[in-house]
Length: 564
Image (cartoon, rainbow, N blue to C red; front, side, top):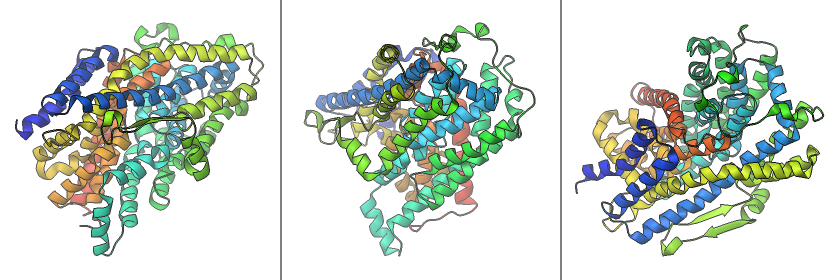
């Protein structure tokens, strides 16, 4: 079988997923078992993987599924706990006091708060946290998922305290080989790595400044009474102001401080600037925009998880600070557990279940770090909330019961989705000495477009994230490929590796199991295709802009690096 045919065959599981989910509108619980079986069949036949390796990859996927379900459980449990404590009522009132305009609330609660959570924890946590929060604030569940997925863009490359760059890019490149060449040219790895980080930050900042506006426009177009683009555009001055308030400190942190803190610093500075401005009515339209009455919403907008705020009003009023304290505590613990070496060591070595070289397959391992994962930290926050909010024990039991029920549907879908991903990623070890399926796909793309490949470099990164649901994993898989391609066509390897990370961040908006995870938190399982049809729009915007910026940087400004 020739290389082109193999590469096309590697695309089949992804094409099949897109056709079934988006084309035929199948629910993920029905589509993903079929996609998993197709990936396994291709791996065993065309890719000549051993049955043992396919099985080991499946087991690895199941372990990762357990980790993701733990995060989902933590996010839902925190929300349900705050519901029963009365905090959600106070939070909702607080947002209404900032502004009753849903577009303003979207910028602050979804974008800025979501960016902070992404910077602190990553791995899809913002959608899992922000989506149910928005539902609690009175948003349709479908709108909440869409907005939660759109957050998985600009801040993602620096999510989880820079993991996609620190682990993904650095781990995905031949560091030893590149370092040797850099030393010969009078440079060093730190300089090269800092250059990549800076280019990631500046590219994201240029594109991401319009993301808050994009979120508002998508909200009014798909969930407004009149389905209007212009109702979203009318808040452009405020939304762009909020975008600038985020991206300027974000870019400065990326250029001067490194990859760990751009998203968190950008979000915190943004909140400190934008919230007082919104309260003062600065650049906020005089006409308040809101959804139609909930009774008029289509059934497809509404999830199975319902938060009846009215039933919680009998509790004593809670201050805004006390209501928000669990989220402040969550952010603080997430940062501390990832920045402080001693705390991180404790969290990563306590309550860990690990399996190494599953079924004897070298390199296929898995672990669940119950305490270090955001799910564990959210459970700790829930326990703290029980005391901080003076809850009764039956209220906590009710929250646990409600959260446990929600996991059942998500678990079934992810049981097939993530093992499929691991088969693709692990397919590089086979009896025919073929490259991994993702690498084969990327090679086909690169060879097909030739000299204009820099425009499509970010698209390859997005493809990797679409497959794996992770910026980090996409970078691990494809960073070296981007580096080699850059050298082959004679352009800056640092720039192409940087846009790989940018594209991988954009790809998170359409990553299937991220959509599933977000949908699970608001009771929308089975309608993932509808979400994908919407989030593909901002994804295309992001990739086209990234492509244009890359082409201009290389061919107009002549961006270079120490190896060029």
